[in-house]
Amino acid sequence: MTVSDRVRLLDEIRILEFIAVELNLYLDNNPNDHKAIRDYNSFTKQLMAVKDEYQRRYGPLSNFGTAWSQSPWAWLNDPWPWELD
Image (cartoon, rainbow, N blue to C red):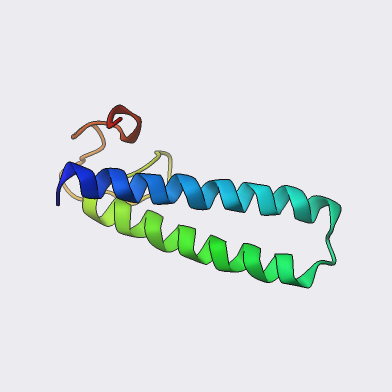
């Protein structure tokens, strides 16, 4: 596991989150577009998988019940995701 692997996963998360937000906004105005709904669900599934992989390898992306933690408590270990740039 290298820093470049970690950054690659973070970049993939950013891209998939952007796509999900854009599709969400589109669907707010076009709620009956079945292809867009399928696309949204597909990208959301991909996003969840990449976030899960990142969190298993490097720890939580956010706090307060959105990610599990190993023992001992490791929330403060390693740089925060936004400190990797």
